[in-house]
Image (cartoon, rainbow, N blue to C red; front, side):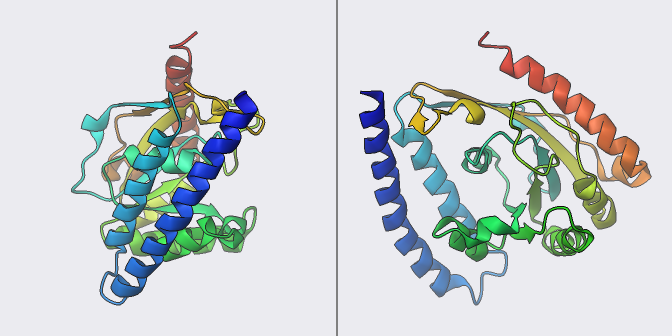
Length: 244
């Protein structure tokens, strides 16, 4: 029964996404020449994610700490990574932002095309040139007042633990002269059992107090990276233990 229900809701999501993509592509064509920040596309993505989390029965999203989000400033947002569901999940943040994602994602049908239209940043993981490109493109968007979201682990966590952070996001924040907004998320890694949807799943996002641009500028990047890892890992333990 669970398998049949999963197939039905996968088909529902696919049909909804295909129809919505047509709207998305038309709006992109009509706005790309004058909407430099891709603001309209961003808000269309936000609407899609809102519907997506309501198509699956019993999926609930809980958000804490939104009082720490200063919408007047651009941020480098860092968050742990459990599954691809983290991407729609983070649209709960009331910010206009671009994603940093591995370049292979941009080759995917529909999803990759949308990320290109959105203006997100592709990175060749594990290469110095990829990091350099990420920092360059990130600073461009940050300079326009937009935020950047980065998974500092660089990959999905296979065991749902928070693993060592890479320094790229923190270097980008320091060079762009912006603060860091740390977030921890839980639930996406348990949203399915293999390919079967886990109905009734709870997702949690907790926004932590930010690190100001002045603090970032004065910090040693290596120490800042390690401190942020330890702080986020401690908060992550708190939110994922709530249902235990």
